[in-house]
Length: 99
Image (cartoon, rainbow, N blue to C red; front, side, top):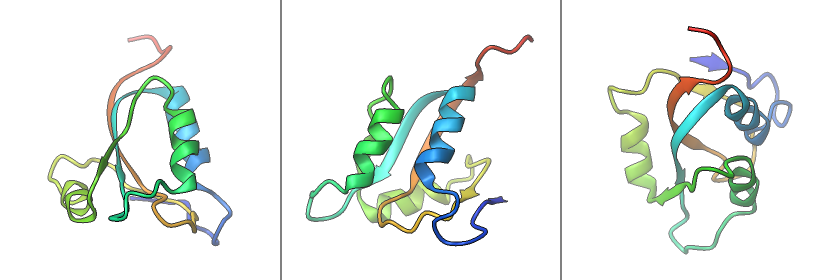
């Protein structure tokens, strides 16, 4: 686990997602969608960053189940304070590096 949540609002989820997106191929993304299907404002930020990957919206319990999966290798806690500011990523190979 990586803790970047030094204080609320200091390191926000879109900034961390942007850095990850510049470094690693993101194969897929899951967002925890609200039950009322009203798209949270932060989703637009996520979608702009993930321009090549259309995130899937899943229900709260499906999201929590996926987050507890044995295949989860890394969890990054940010200082994001907005609701629905969490993302599950499936990552591919590293960009731009030599083998």
